[in-house]
Image (cartoon, rainbow, N blue to C red; front, side):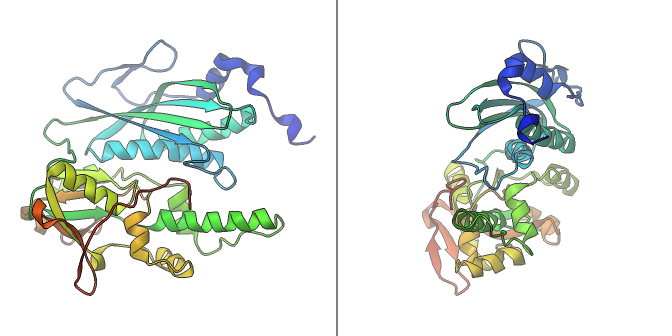
Length: 346
């Protein structure tokens, strides 16, 4: 039997039949979820906690290319990029809603794959899927995810609390997702010219995973709590280090000195950048989708983080009048510019 015969059109199930199918295995994990899927609205009870909410939209052809992004990976990533914003508030995600617009080219089985990734992410991050919507699209696939989380009033962290002399810290390493995208785009162009050519992806598993299946820094709120640190400001790195630093500086009314030599990068990122004749620092500054956390801490907390393997101190905040500068390896100060991250484009 051919693969085509096994595909079910969405119209065969109808909207409500499709919703039932995609959400039939949802299990509630959090006490704050009083009512999930199946009513006119979800019911959440947070008692004395503060609620944080974030929404992201992913559009086919803009944020992702289905020529090389598996639907299961896409579903997983759609959840991760949203709950990363919750962790960036030093809060814990608890629920998500997922809305999709799909064109007739997607079978029910294809949407099963998408939701398999969504369910996998919910399982890993202990998040409840509590609602959403489905509708038709004329041009492809659109996914909208809203993440809802909780945090303590005195430990919620915003973008606006950084002060001059605060230390600038980052989790993990940067630039990998961007270089993974460059590799995928290159191999996709080769495939267009010669569909019989096998993609040359061997040896670059790390940067490919950074692009196709990123992880949110679920561990950071607990690590900060254990260290006795409440960051003065925090943001997740979705649009590149440069843009995120500028957001923190604008919201906090400060400047920044970022040291090029301190920016952490993986060897695969550096190797791929060299292959593309790109300076690796450019990938870290102007790439995106690393979903690491960038935060500032008081100078008084230096001793707590200086030897912590999870964090790297990459600079310090200054008076706003000093500007936002990259201090190069040669010691020059270059004003940082936010190039902007064009999702899904090379």
